[in-house]
Image 1 (tube, rainbow over the protein chains, first blue to last red):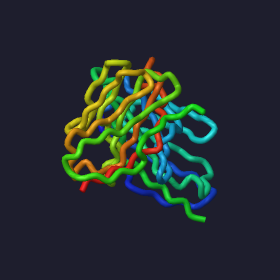
Image 2: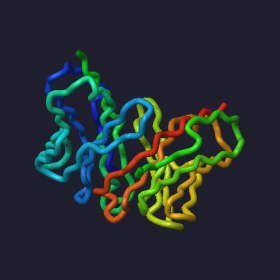
Image 3: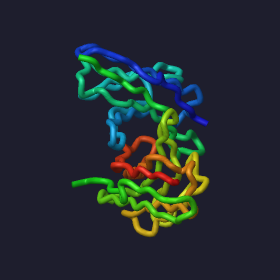
Image 4: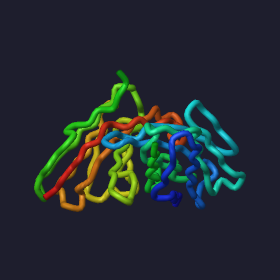
Length: 112
Length: 115
């Protein structure tokens, strides 16, 4: 059973780089790692996804080590509008690939 | 506009009174899913559906039912709600061709209180 563990909360200041790590020790060979962002009173929305090594898009980077037992979401130069909860998501593995397991989320608080 | 809609957005009910939360998507997605969100527990999957008439249990299916008679709709049914089902519920959908990599699009949420 794939389970993810994240820090409950993090504080940062505007302009800093923020790294949020997610642990997923039981990740299966076919599982991808996906990160979602959630603002209060809204549903989560997709940020980035990867399988291994590094992935970068216009809003974030995702670092995945060779053993894939963890992943790190990197947000460059955060602003106040990045204050949100960030969820790490992995699939259900080889036999439950249509099921998904979100972590409990990391509440990022960006201060001026 | 491509979106997932849920109704109602807020609902207060009493123990044992059957209720249905509707979910509809206009993106022709095959995969749909229900999650509940509770403080400290994050999002937990209740049920999902790969296509019409195909549904399966997620991580926390007890006390819930779903149906998928049409591709666009995926209602969540609580036959006999109990206070421990007080939660924030999200419906999500994705293309479904490759669920493990598909982006899930979430609805705005339904806040349910069972007294």
